[in-house]
Image (tube, rainbow, N blue to C red; front, top):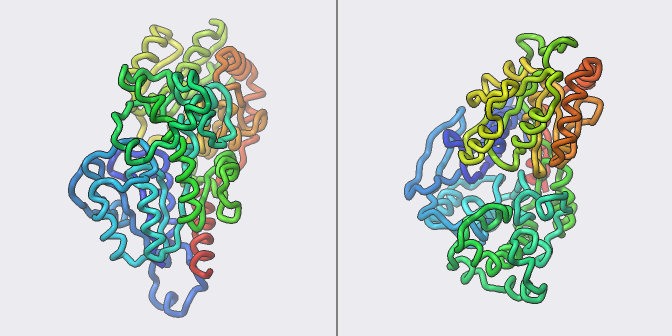
Length: 466
């Protein structure tokens, strides 16, 4: 069985959780048999699932092929750099013919796509289906359904994900709130060809708190309704061209279902991690010890670092606590904002970004992982990684975090944007050693990539047999 894994970007480029998980998953997936073991396979051991990766090469006009962790990677050109909206690739990007020629020549059995954006989106999935491949699309984030990509209505409360042109436009754009519903509806019917030629505001699908200058403020009310409508239409195309649509968390499954994706095409298959054995026992907190809290993640407003930092600063001085932040480069302005907030507080320090190799043993040096996300995460993987090291998690009571953390059993869930609630929770965990030890003991074995691979292989097998 030949399988193409398609992405918008891949290693050695700067990547995130999607690529990290796939890189760990592929060796396990290649070992899973899609069918009953044959005598030929016994006589001559081979990979039962042959995997190739196709990933966009951002801004490059040329193709490239190389191996990464023993998997062949084809980088197809995307040139010139396309506009970000509509962001599901309703219109093929420049040099799409290179991808089309390569995919046509592969004659693969399965095409499995992991992004839904202009670099790897609707045209790529449609082509695979037209070539006769069985098609799988994994949805790893809220972008296909949410104009803000956070699934937080007006940035404040959890949304059900149902796409509605007026509601979504007014949520994503401040000026659209001032327009009559009929006007917003009319603007949603602007043809894609016109939308694609309009000057593009930088924050076309970001929260309205982002200042994208006069151009953005002027253009947004005219284009956002069309972008929302494009999202809605692209979901219908997704359902048409994907034989199976995999979601990695329950809230995303429900969001696609409420938007009309047929339930028979939807499959929930959560991420797993490569289990790392303990080289040393994790930290056990004594009553006199400070609570050692760690944050691992991007310098990004959605990660909620300022909530965590302010909560620590608001703690009474008698509460012994140490917060260490291992930040990943993304938004330098936001990073500087956090440094200014920390000021000279000796309880908070910032360390260099960790490598994947350093992660397990670094986690084991802490009593608690903090995940103060301000949007609906589909994981995150770091929750599983902390639990694999017997480290409890304090996290926002949102999305995937709330699906992975059991409040009062293996972690603590807190209202995401309530600094006082975070302060109170941290004080309780810092002063109640028995509670912290109870949470540690409540941690169950985590889901592994081998479990995930078995589910994905079963999907492939089912598609081939049918």
